[in-house]
Image 1 (cartoon, rainbow, N blue to C red):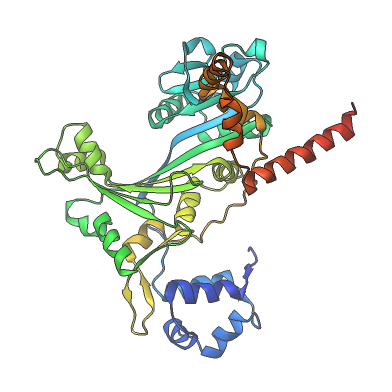
Image 2: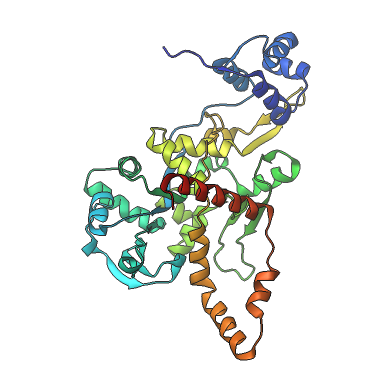
Length: 414
Protein backbone atom coordinates (compact mmCIF):
# COMPACT_ATOMS: atom_id res chain seq x y z
CA UNK A 1 0.00 0.00 0.00
CA UNK A 2 1.36 3.42 -0.99
CA UNK A 3 2.33 5.77 1.83
CA UNK A 4 -0.11 8.64 2.36
CA UNK A 5 1.70 11.81 1.24
CA UNK A 6 1.95 14.79 3.62
CA UNK A 7 0.95 18.25 2.40
CA UNK A 8 1.84 21.59 3.93
CA UNK A 9 -0.63 23.43 6.13
CA UNK A 10 -0.35 26.48 3.89
CA UNK A 11 -2.42 24.65 1.24
CA UNK A 12 -5.24 24.05 3.70
CA UNK A 13 -5.14 27.70 4.79
CA UNK A 14 -5.25 28.93 1.21
CA UNK A 15 -8.12 26.56 0.40
CA UNK A 16 -10.09 27.71 3.48
CA UNK A 17 -9.57 31.43 2.88
CA UNK A 18 -9.53 31.72 -0.91
CA UNK A 19 -11.92 28.94 -1.96
CA UNK A 20 -14.39 28.31 0.87
CA UNK A 21 -13.91 31.82 2.35
CA UNK A 22 -14.46 30.94 6.00
CA UNK A 23 -12.65 31.77 9.23
CA UNK A 24 -11.09 28.91 11.17
CA UNK A 25 -14.06 28.50 13.54
CA UNK A 26 -16.72 28.22 10.83
CA UNK A 27 -14.48 26.05 8.66
CA UNK A 28 -13.95 23.67 11.59
CA UNK A 29 -17.72 23.45 12.13
CA UNK A 30 -18.23 22.79 8.39
CA UNK A 31 -15.83 19.83 8.31
CA UNK A 32 -16.69 18.45 11.77
CA UNK A 33 -13.33 19.10 13.45
CA UNK A 34 -12.23 21.28 16.33
CA UNK A 35 -10.78 24.76 15.82
CA UNK A 36 -7.56 23.65 17.55
CA UNK A 37 -7.21 20.79 15.04
CA UNK A 38 -7.56 23.17 12.08
CA UNK A 39 -5.06 25.59 13.65
CA UNK A 40 -2.56 22.80 14.25
CA UNK A 41 -2.88 21.59 10.66
CA UNK A 42 -2.43 25.09 9.21
CA UNK A 43 0.59 25.84 11.41
CA UNK A 44 2.15 22.44 10.61
CA UNK A 45 2.13 21.43 14.27
CA UNK A 46 0.13 18.43 13.09
CA UNK A 47 0.94 16.68 9.80
CA UNK A 48 -1.83 16.97 7.20
CA UNK A 49 -2.04 14.01 4.83
CA UNK A 50 -3.56 14.03 1.36
CA UNK A 51 -6.29 11.60 2.43
CA UNK A 52 -7.26 13.83 5.38
CA UNK A 53 -7.34 16.90 3.13
CA UNK A 54 -9.55 15.02 0.64
CA UNK A 55 -11.81 13.89 3.51
CA UNK A 56 -12.32 17.53 4.54
CA UNK A 57 -13.13 18.52 0.96
CA UNK A 58 -15.62 15.68 0.60
CA UNK A 59 -17.44 16.82 3.74
CA UNK A 60 -17.82 20.23 2.07
CA UNK A 61 -19.38 18.77 -1.07
CA UNK A 62 -16.36 18.05 -3.28
CA UNK A 63 -16.59 14.72 -5.04
CA UNK A 64 -14.94 12.47 -7.61
CA UNK A 65 -15.96 13.00 -11.21
CA UNK A 66 -18.41 10.60 -12.82
CA UNK A 67 -16.74 8.35 -15.38
CA UNK A 68 -18.02 8.55 -18.95
CA UNK A 69 -19.26 12.13 -18.44
CA UNK A 70 -16.41 13.54 -20.54
CA UNK A 71 -14.78 12.34 -23.73
CA UNK A 72 -11.24 13.77 -23.95
CA UNK A 73 -9.29 14.11 -27.19
CA UNK A 74 -6.32 15.91 -28.73
CA UNK A 75 -7.82 18.46 -31.11
CA UNK A 76 -4.84 20.44 -32.43
CA UNK A 77 -1.09 19.96 -32.35
CA UNK A 78 1.90 21.84 -33.69
CA UNK A 79 5.42 20.47 -33.16
CA UNK A 80 8.72 21.82 -34.48
CA UNK A 81 11.83 19.73 -35.14
CA UNK A 82 15.03 21.73 -35.58
CA UNK A 83 17.02 19.38 -37.82
CA UNK A 84 15.32 16.80 -40.09
CA UNK A 85 17.66 15.72 -42.88
CA UNK A 86 15.69 12.73 -44.21
CA UNK A 87 12.04 13.75 -44.40
CA UNK A 88 10.88 10.46 -45.93
CA UNK A 89 12.40 8.51 -43.04
CA UNK A 90 10.87 11.00 -40.61
CA UNK A 91 7.31 10.70 -41.94
CA UNK A 92 7.52 6.90 -42.16
CA UNK A 93 8.98 6.55 -38.66
CA UNK A 94 6.94 9.12 -36.74
CA UNK A 95 3.80 9.75 -38.81
CA UNK A 96 3.39 6.16 -40.06
CA UNK A 97 3.07 7.13 -43.71
CA UNK A 98 5.71 7.66 -46.45
CA UNK A 99 6.45 11.06 -47.93
CA UNK A 100 5.02 10.07 -51.33
CA UNK A 101 1.53 10.18 -49.76
CA UNK A 102 1.95 13.94 -49.25
CA UNK A 103 1.31 16.64 -51.87
CA UNK A 104 3.90 19.38 -52.32
CA UNK A 105 3.09 23.10 -52.61
CA UNK A 106 4.49 26.56 -51.93
CA UNK A 107 3.48 28.51 -48.85
CA UNK A 108 4.20 31.67 -46.88
CA UNK A 109 2.58 30.48 -43.65
CA UNK A 110 4.56 30.68 -40.39
CA UNK A 111 7.62 32.03 -42.26
CA UNK A 112 8.10 28.76 -44.15
CA UNK A 113 8.37 28.51 -47.94
CA UNK A 114 7.20 24.95 -48.58
CA UNK A 115 4.34 22.72 -47.42
CA UNK A 116 3.65 18.98 -47.58
CA UNK A 117 -0.04 18.05 -47.22
CA UNK A 118 -1.72 14.73 -46.58
CA UNK A 119 -5.31 15.86 -46.10
CA UNK A 120 -5.18 17.98 -42.95
CA UNK A 121 -1.84 16.57 -41.80
CA UNK A 122 0.62 19.30 -42.77
CA UNK A 123 4.43 19.50 -42.69
CA UNK A 124 6.12 22.88 -43.19
CA UNK A 125 9.72 23.13 -44.35
CA UNK A 126 11.98 25.27 -46.59
CA UNK A 127 12.27 24.88 -50.35
CA UNK A 128 15.91 26.06 -50.28
CA UNK A 129 17.07 24.06 -47.24
CA UNK A 130 20.03 22.49 -49.02
CA UNK A 131 21.33 25.99 -49.88
CA UNK A 132 20.57 27.63 -46.53
CA UNK A 133 21.33 24.56 -44.40
CA UNK A 134 18.03 25.14 -42.58
CA UNK A 135 16.39 21.75 -42.03
CA UNK A 136 13.77 22.83 -39.52
CA UNK A 137 10.24 21.46 -40.01
CA UNK A 138 6.90 21.97 -38.26
CA UNK A 139 4.11 19.40 -38.11
CA UNK A 140 0.61 20.85 -37.82
CA UNK A 141 -2.51 18.79 -37.17
CA UNK A 142 -5.83 20.64 -37.08
CA UNK A 143 -8.84 19.01 -35.44
CA UNK A 144 -9.61 17.17 -38.70
CA UNK A 145 -5.91 16.36 -39.03
CA UNK A 146 -5.91 14.77 -35.57
CA UNK A 147 -8.88 12.59 -36.52
CA UNK A 148 -7.18 11.58 -39.79
CA UNK A 149 -3.97 10.74 -37.94
CA UNK A 150 -5.95 8.64 -35.46
CA UNK A 151 -7.18 6.50 -38.40
CA UNK A 152 -3.54 5.95 -39.42
CA UNK A 153 -2.61 5.04 -35.85
CA UNK A 154 -5.57 2.65 -35.63
CA UNK A 155 -4.42 0.97 -38.84
CA UNK A 156 -0.92 0.49 -37.41
CA UNK A 157 -2.21 -0.54 -33.97
CA UNK A 158 -0.54 2.36 -32.16
CA UNK A 159 -1.72 5.34 -30.11
CA UNK A 160 -1.05 8.99 -29.31
CA UNK A 161 1.04 8.15 -26.27
CA UNK A 162 3.20 5.66 -28.19
CA UNK A 163 3.74 8.05 -31.11
CA UNK A 164 4.63 10.98 -28.84
CA UNK A 165 6.85 8.81 -26.63
CA UNK A 166 8.81 7.71 -29.70
CA UNK A 167 9.22 11.32 -30.81
CA UNK A 168 10.19 12.72 -27.42
CA UNK A 169 12.61 9.87 -26.60
CA UNK A 170 14.34 9.76 -29.99
CA UNK A 171 14.27 13.39 -31.10
CA UNK A 172 16.24 15.80 -28.97
CA UNK A 173 15.30 18.65 -31.34
CA UNK A 174 11.56 18.37 -30.64
CA UNK A 175 9.63 21.41 -29.36
CA UNK A 176 5.85 21.35 -28.87
CA UNK A 177 4.55 24.76 -29.94
CA UNK A 178 0.82 24.26 -29.42
CA UNK A 179 -1.55 21.63 -28.05
CA UNK A 180 -5.35 21.81 -27.81
CA UNK A 181 -7.20 19.37 -25.55
CA UNK A 182 -10.96 19.08 -26.11
CA UNK A 183 -13.37 17.67 -23.51
CA UNK A 184 -16.86 16.85 -24.78
CA UNK A 185 -19.65 16.70 -22.20
CA UNK A 186 -21.65 13.65 -23.26
CA UNK A 187 -25.44 14.00 -23.48
CA UNK A 188 -27.36 12.24 -20.68
CA UNK A 189 -30.74 12.08 -22.38
CA UNK A 190 -33.88 14.17 -22.71
CA UNK A 191 -35.15 13.57 -19.18
CA UNK A 192 -31.72 14.28 -17.64
CA UNK A 193 -30.89 17.65 -19.21
CA UNK A 194 -30.98 19.31 -15.77
CA UNK A 195 -27.77 17.38 -14.99
CA UNK A 196 -25.86 19.31 -17.66
CA UNK A 197 -23.97 22.56 -17.20
CA UNK A 198 -25.60 25.56 -18.85
CA UNK A 199 -23.00 28.09 -19.92
CA UNK A 200 -25.50 30.91 -19.33
CA UNK A 201 -25.59 29.82 -15.66
CA UNK A 202 -21.77 30.09 -15.52
CA UNK A 203 -22.02 33.73 -16.62
CA UNK A 204 -24.55 34.40 -13.84
CA UNK A 205 -22.11 32.79 -11.39
CA UNK A 206 -19.27 34.96 -12.69
CA UNK A 207 -21.20 38.10 -11.75
CA UNK A 208 -22.35 36.68 -8.39
CA UNK A 209 -18.82 35.63 -7.38
CA UNK A 210 -19.65 31.92 -7.48
CA UNK A 211 -17.18 31.29 -10.31
CA UNK A 212 -13.58 32.28 -9.69
CA UNK A 213 -10.94 32.25 -12.43
CA UNK A 214 -7.63 32.40 -10.60
CA UNK A 215 -4.66 33.59 -12.70
CA UNK A 216 -6.72 33.83 -15.91
CA UNK A 217 -7.07 37.63 -15.41
CA UNK A 218 -9.97 38.10 -17.83
CA UNK A 219 -13.00 36.48 -19.43
CA UNK A 220 -15.46 37.28 -22.20
CA UNK A 221 -18.38 35.66 -23.94
CA UNK A 222 -20.06 35.55 -27.35
CA UNK A 223 -23.76 34.80 -27.67
CA UNK A 224 -24.48 33.03 -30.96
CA UNK A 225 -28.20 33.86 -31.02
CA UNK A 226 -29.58 35.41 -34.21
CA UNK A 227 -32.39 37.98 -34.27
CA UNK A 228 -33.26 37.13 -37.89
CA UNK A 229 -34.37 33.62 -36.93
CA UNK A 230 -31.44 31.82 -38.56
CA UNK A 231 -29.64 28.94 -36.85
CA UNK A 232 -28.38 29.71 -33.35
CA UNK A 233 -24.61 29.28 -33.02
CA UNK A 234 -24.72 28.81 -29.25
CA UNK A 235 -22.94 30.58 -26.41
CA UNK A 236 -19.14 30.66 -25.99
CA UNK A 237 -17.15 31.70 -22.91
CA UNK A 238 -13.42 32.47 -23.02
CA UNK A 239 -11.05 32.59 -20.04
CA UNK A 240 -7.61 34.19 -20.33
CA UNK A 241 -5.78 35.78 -23.24
CA UNK A 242 -5.18 34.21 -26.66
CA UNK A 243 -1.57 35.38 -26.33
CA UNK A 244 -1.00 33.52 -23.04
CA UNK A 245 0.36 30.00 -22.64
CA UNK A 246 -3.00 28.65 -21.46
CA UNK A 247 -6.42 29.72 -22.67
CA UNK A 248 -9.89 28.17 -22.14
CA UNK A 249 -12.80 28.15 -24.59
CA UNK A 250 -16.13 26.65 -23.48
CA UNK A 251 -18.96 26.49 -26.01
CA UNK A 252 -22.28 24.81 -26.74
CA UNK A 253 -21.06 22.16 -29.14
CA UNK A 254 -24.58 20.86 -29.79
CA UNK A 255 -25.44 24.08 -31.64
CA UNK A 256 -22.30 23.95 -33.78
CA UNK A 257 -23.00 20.35 -34.80
CA UNK A 258 -26.64 21.15 -35.60
CA UNK A 259 -25.64 24.09 -37.81
CA UNK A 260 -22.88 22.14 -39.57
CA UNK A 261 -25.10 19.15 -40.34
CA UNK A 262 -28.22 21.23 -41.11
CA UNK A 263 -30.31 19.57 -38.39
CA UNK A 264 -32.10 20.64 -35.22
CA UNK A 265 -30.30 20.77 -31.88
CA UNK A 266 -32.43 17.86 -30.66
CA UNK A 267 -31.38 15.82 -33.70
CA UNK A 268 -27.71 16.69 -33.16
CA UNK A 269 -27.94 15.52 -29.53
CA UNK A 270 -29.50 12.27 -30.69
CA UNK A 271 -26.91 11.67 -33.40
CA UNK A 272 -23.67 12.95 -31.82
CA UNK A 273 -24.53 12.88 -28.11
CA UNK A 274 -22.44 15.98 -27.24
CA UNK A 275 -23.77 18.80 -25.04
CA UNK A 276 -20.88 21.25 -24.39
CA UNK A 277 -17.22 21.30 -25.36
CA UNK A 278 -14.48 22.52 -22.99
CA UNK A 279 -11.24 23.35 -24.80
CA UNK A 280 -7.82 23.98 -23.28
CA UNK A 281 -5.42 25.70 -25.65
CA UNK A 282 -1.78 25.41 -24.61
CA UNK A 283 1.23 27.12 -26.16
CA UNK A 284 5.01 27.01 -25.95
CA UNK A 285 6.44 25.66 -22.66
CA UNK A 286 2.96 24.83 -21.26
CA UNK A 287 2.24 22.64 -24.32
CA UNK A 288 5.67 21.02 -24.02
CA UNK A 289 5.11 20.28 -20.32
CA UNK A 290 1.73 18.65 -20.91
CA UNK A 291 3.19 16.37 -23.60
CA UNK A 292 5.99 15.43 -21.20
CA UNK A 293 3.43 14.66 -18.46
CA UNK A 294 1.36 12.61 -20.93
CA UNK A 295 4.30 10.62 -22.29
CA UNK A 296 5.45 10.08 -18.71
CA UNK A 297 2.29 8.08 -18.06
CA UNK A 298 -0.26 10.58 -16.71
CA UNK A 299 -3.73 10.06 -18.19
CA UNK A 300 -4.72 12.86 -20.60
CA UNK A 301 -8.16 13.23 -19.01
CA UNK A 302 -6.56 13.64 -15.58
CA UNK A 303 -4.19 16.26 -16.98
CA UNK A 304 -7.08 18.16 -18.58
CA UNK A 305 -9.26 18.16 -15.45
CA UNK A 306 -6.25 19.15 -13.36
CA UNK A 307 -5.59 22.15 -15.60
CA UNK A 308 -9.22 23.26 -15.35
CA UNK A 309 -9.12 22.89 -11.55
CA UNK A 310 -5.89 24.89 -11.38
CA UNK A 311 -7.69 27.95 -12.73
CA UNK A 312 -11.47 27.68 -12.22
CA UNK A 313 -13.68 27.03 -9.19
CA UNK A 314 -17.48 26.87 -9.46
CA UNK A 315 -19.82 27.11 -6.44
CA UNK A 316 -23.54 26.84 -5.78
CA UNK A 317 -24.54 29.01 -2.84
CA UNK A 318 -23.23 28.77 0.73
CA UNK A 319 -23.66 26.40 3.64
CA UNK A 320 -25.16 27.29 7.02
CA UNK A 321 -21.79 28.70 8.13
CA UNK A 322 -21.47 30.97 5.08
CA UNK A 323 -18.85 28.87 3.29
CA UNK A 324 -19.07 28.41 -0.47
CA UNK A 325 -20.46 25.03 -1.57
CA UNK A 326 -18.94 23.43 -4.70
CA UNK A 327 -21.32 23.10 -7.64
CA UNK A 328 -22.42 19.45 -7.93
CA UNK A 329 -22.72 19.42 -11.73
CA UNK A 330 -19.24 20.92 -12.10
CA UNK A 331 -17.83 18.38 -9.63
CA UNK A 332 -19.30 15.48 -11.59
CA UNK A 333 -17.40 16.71 -14.67
CA UNK A 334 -14.13 18.00 -13.26
CA UNK A 335 -13.91 16.81 -9.65
CA UNK A 336 -11.63 14.12 -8.29
CA UNK A 337 -8.22 15.59 -9.03
CA UNK A 338 -6.07 18.19 -7.40
CA UNK A 339 -5.06 21.26 -9.43
CA UNK A 340 -2.20 20.42 -11.78
CA UNK A 341 0.85 22.64 -11.49
CA UNK A 342 3.13 22.18 -14.48
CA UNK A 343 6.87 22.60 -14.19
CA UNK A 344 7.87 24.59 -17.24
CA UNK A 345 11.28 25.30 -18.67
CA UNK A 346 11.21 28.50 -20.75
CA UNK A 347 13.01 28.19 -24.05
CA UNK A 348 16.21 30.16 -24.53
CA UNK A 349 15.80 33.11 -26.86
CA UNK A 350 17.01 32.45 -30.39
CA UNK A 351 17.99 35.59 -32.37
CA UNK A 352 17.44 33.62 -35.59
CA UNK A 353 13.68 33.54 -34.95
CA UNK A 354 13.58 37.35 -34.96
CA UNK A 355 15.79 37.54 -38.04
CA UNK A 356 13.54 35.09 -39.90
CA UNK A 357 10.49 37.13 -38.97
CA UNK A 358 12.13 40.29 -40.31
CA UNK A 359 13.14 38.53 -43.52
CA UNK A 360 9.71 37.17 -44.30
CA UNK A 361 7.55 40.00 -42.95
CA UNK A 362 9.31 43.36 -43.43
CA UNK A 363 12.41 42.82 -45.61
CA UNK A 364 10.65 44.03 -48.79
CA UNK A 365 9.57 47.25 -47.09
CA UNK A 366 13.02 47.85 -45.60
CA UNK A 367 14.66 47.32 -48.99
CA UNK A 368 12.24 49.82 -50.52
CA UNK A 369 13.15 52.42 -47.89
CA UNK A 370 16.87 51.66 -48.36
CA UNK A 371 16.65 52.24 -52.13
CA UNK A 372 14.60 55.40 -51.54
CA UNK A 373 17.37 56.69 -49.24
CA UNK A 374 19.87 56.31 -52.08
CA UNK A 375 17.59 58.05 -54.60
CA UNK A 376 16.49 60.91 -52.37
CA UNK A 377 19.64 61.21 -50.27
CA UNK A 378 17.56 60.67 -47.13
CA UNK A 379 18.23 58.78 -43.88
CA UNK A 380 14.94 56.99 -43.34
CA UNK A 381 16.56 53.66 -42.43
CA UNK A 382 18.57 55.37 -39.68
CA UNK A 383 15.43 57.16 -38.51
CA UNK A 384 13.65 53.80 -38.19
CA UNK A 385 16.49 52.32 -36.13
CA UNK A 386 16.80 55.40 -33.93
CA UNK A 387 13.03 55.37 -33.27
CA UNK A 388 13.34 51.95 -31.66
CA UNK A 389 13.84 51.61 -27.90
CA UNK A 390 15.33 48.69 -25.99
CA UNK A 391 12.97 47.46 -23.29
CA UNK A 392 14.12 45.74 -20.09
CA UNK A 393 13.22 42.40 -21.70
CA UNK A 394 15.31 43.31 -24.77
CA UNK A 395 18.30 44.10 -22.55
CA UNK A 396 17.94 40.76 -20.79
CA UNK A 397 17.96 39.05 -24.20
CA UNK A 398 21.15 40.90 -25.17
CA UNK A 399 22.80 39.90 -21.89
CA UNK A 400 21.94 36.24 -22.48
CA UNK A 401 23.33 36.46 -26.03
CA UNK A 402 26.50 38.09 -24.69
CA UNK A 403 26.91 35.30 -22.11
CA UNK A 404 26.35 32.69 -24.81
CA UNK A 405 28.97 34.30 -27.05
CA UNK A 406 31.54 34.29 -24.20
CA UNK A 407 30.83 30.62 -23.51
CA UNK A 408 31.28 29.77 -27.19
CA UNK A 409 34.59 31.65 -27.35
CA UNK A 410 35.84 29.93 -24.19
CA UNK A 411 35.10 26.52 -25.71
CA UNK A 412 36.10 27.02 -29.34
CA UNK A 413 38.54 29.92 -29.23
CA UNK A 414 38.97 32.29 -32.17
